[in-house]
Image (tube, rainbow, N blue to C red; front, side, top):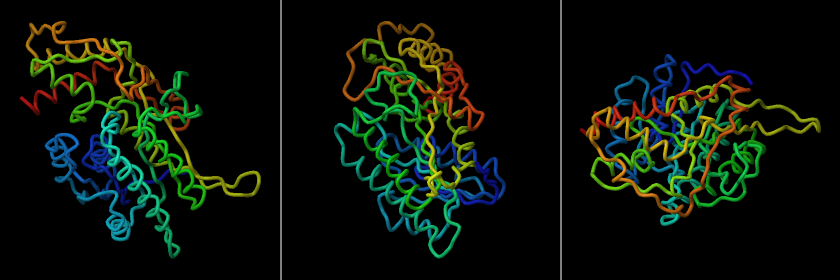
Length: 354
């Protein structure tokens, strides 16, 4: 793989006010002199927009950041951004997130995750028009959800992933197939990243650790699904960003296969902690760190505020990332411990809400 020098490049990040998008934009602007980040986000109210504005505030004060509010499904807008800014690198993180929300609001997923991603692929395709150098690398977010009903663990990108258990997962698998087709047809260097349960400060309030914290602080009772017999490969946000940056700089090469035809410059990786945690252990560490940070009182009766309940639709009992390929190709493996990550989240939560 050839390595791209990020300095003085233009990077388009969709979902720039999102959890991963904002953290990635901050890291790129900090690391690469002269780099320009064009951030697109619709600031939708799927969760508390104040958190999105908080993330954006940390970016707006940085030289080289340009923010555009709009919909990824707006093809005219997407084409205009490509024409005006001519990004050399594109990171597509914008998507309607959430497994359970897709059960009740399917239209949002088709519009953003399918139509929106198609608009990105088409804009990348036409970035080469007229002999222009165009997009050197498209990196896009997939999800561990694509593994669906698989029973083999850890999950490898070599495994079958054609049994989604939610529409959200189906849209993410569709993104992978679309990207591979465009890589083959138009030689667009593309890499998909299957993220595993990303968490950390300024994260998404619809994620379990954040929702549990809100409920416990309000004196409510948290519901632990599958009677606590779930495992998740929790991955800290800084580890995710490090992985994305390393991947972004090294696009798949355009090469010819043994039959003389070009191979698609396409790759797919898991980014997970490679160490799934039991859900009951997770909530125990979370409440300890919330007490230590002063979010919960020192005498908090945790046992009185939890309830073990059956599995809910769309969920799977285990997520576990095989990160062998990521380690092999980029010399990187996420390593932040769950306690360290939850401590940083608890400290941020105290500062932001209290």
